[in-house]
Image (cartoon, rainbow, N blue to C red):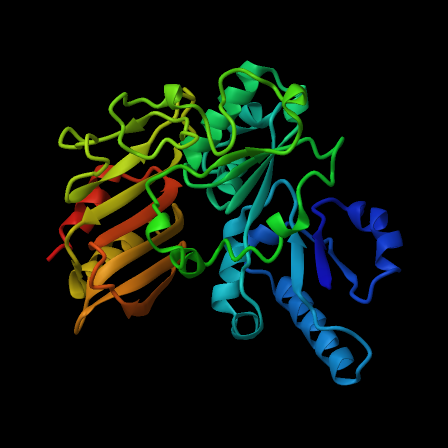
Length: 381
């Protein structure tokens, strides 16, 4: 059972009318917020809508008239900046106690995304196309049937240039809306890095998210993208790359001169800036800061976070990481944040048979990668 909050930026709501027939057949309602874009502030009406939905579900459950509510789908406009919406669930007591973010899903138009990403904007305005990809936990690359092989590859490269970590599913929702299983979109715990950390050694934040297809091969734009988990190895910018190319990652990555890929490692302390072949720079990008074989000092890492947020809170869209940090002993800490809203949660003791490895991913606008990769390295004991 899901409730829907539908946001309309125009004067007249359209999508909620299309959903009216569905709405009549459900216990939960479609809530329309039509007095502006959700992202403009941490909106009081969004919080009111969440409170109304949760309390209504609780009352029906108490009276035995309905089933428990599984979640709330918040559909924003194509103009929205997801940041303030995500921050709502960090900054409001009711939302924090009753809800958590399951994941941010962004639908990207394979035909028109590059034009939207690179169009001229007034000085000081945000690049909403880049921001929506930057915040995404999953990208649905739509209309792949209408894109040429070259356009599709350029679009994939452009997405990777903004957010290398996000998994991408290629699809044609207009023709095959049921091609993506609902379980791939809901109840995925994609926003919570702590859940992903349960994968143990399988989680590597320096590797690109996989690229999957939903339609048969002949209906997709072919042309050297590789299938079953990513782009082909031939697209990798480093012929000696030691990342596991089981399906490949399909980007050129930029490493420091000391990077030794021969053994599949990255040395003791450095990071990767993932820069794809797409030539237009939106200013929004992502990179990983990594320290291997050494634990981090907690006091130094807290100083690093304070300096990072002081310098870049506005332009730091999302950041996440899993670090081996020493307090009394060495434990696993999970880092998650949106702008200045930062959470650092202590987990279990670091396994005695597992080498220390700390990885912090930063996604934002005009972030100096070498400075902050060096900042994490300086936290090592």
